Length: 266
Image 1 (cartoon, rainbow, N blue to C red):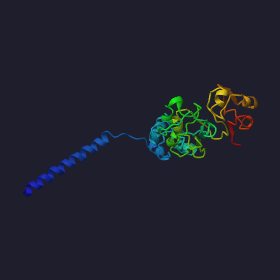
Image 2 (image 1 turned 60 degrees about the vertical axis):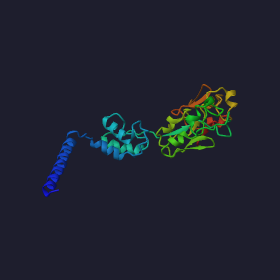
Image 3 (image 1 turned 30 degrees about the vertical axis):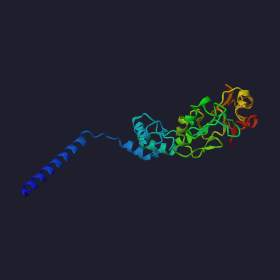
Image 4 (image 1 turned 180 degrees about the vertical axis):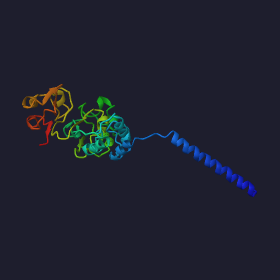
């Protein structure tokens, strides 16, 4: 190839590259999406777990929603009050104190206390096991299956299977709600972190039917309801319920419960 051809090729390539560069630069400015500086600052303040516990697709989704006014500055359950305060300053608003919550498993039917109807040899997953006969091998149709779907879903290693049932480590729980959404028995709920009295059962079976399948389930005897001076306990559908707004955590209900299905951390 002659020197003239080489120079011509170089000019063509260089010119093409220059044109593309100018075109991309112009397009970048023309179609650029303006990002609110507050959104970037909020994203930096968020913990970055991208757990989805806030109800949005990751921390970036929450940051955008806060800037648009679609979410509260305290919308991150992982960051809690400290992060809410930082975001409040960025947004120029006061971050209202938000009560810390934790997950709680409403079942005390351990391997020793709750029987099984048959042996399950399928995939060790609660969702799969719940599709089997009678909603799973456990004798109590309302009880924890113990295969750890909630454990797999928890991004904070705050829930584990112990003696056949799921248990939450309160200190590690960030109340993201992922364990709640994955439990096929709907056994997990969020309660105030400060709450120290719990009903560890979710069965609506009558007393005799419940006692046939579990040694610790609630039989709806109303002893707890009758002894609660604060009026915080009511029995509905053979199951005791605690109103955390009224409960004083005195522990009388746990002391009086003949089945010891009410736990009090005093």
